[in-house]
Length: 269
Image (cartoon, rainbow, N blue to C red; front, side, top):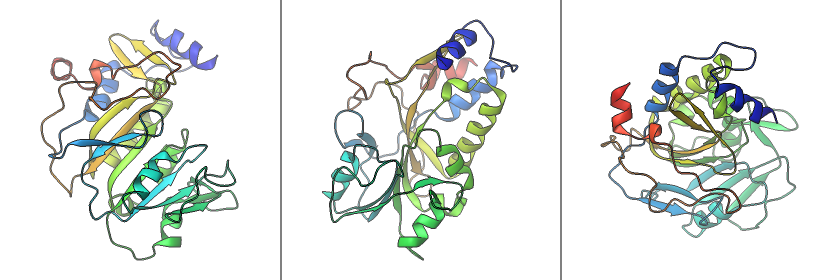
């Protein structure tokens, strides 16, 4: 109900209780996340539905994946195990992962900004199992909005040790709210100092905000690739990607809105 009211208000040029962020500022943030070619084709890891993600075909040499947010699926981590990549999984909401494999190490913890009985920071998690490890890793994070506190609280040096980041960003329909916009922008700027986006995919399990020609999915899956690994190429110019699949078959299909990738719209603003 709250999301419906927020979208209804925004469609008429208002936010609830706060002045909205200028359209130009929101567009500037969106454009900073425009996907670019990376020199390697994208491959799909995991199922052709929720839990599958597109990543650069550059996994050779990656031994470990950190994957906070388990719930009832581990198809992505299972596919990595078939490639001899060990996954560390964490989620306080479940007692164990849905699939047991020797390549899995599970902690019943939420990943967040503190260390206590329920939460653990990404830094503490990595040091628990891989102290001093200097190899490149993979991070896949779908933690229902807690990704922002994790990104802001994690040292940039640790984030930079990942070759590929797959992060699901939530609550993006709040981008016109000044408080939410500041948090999302800070997280994106931190990531973009070491990575660039190679793929973006809207999660059709949630809705879509439309305002003055700007379309913002509530939830987006973004794949980031390390700038240290390969320089970014040209912007991607067509969507959807041939390997894209809707997350939820029971919901209406959703294609990445043009303002997230179109060169024409990026140039016009």
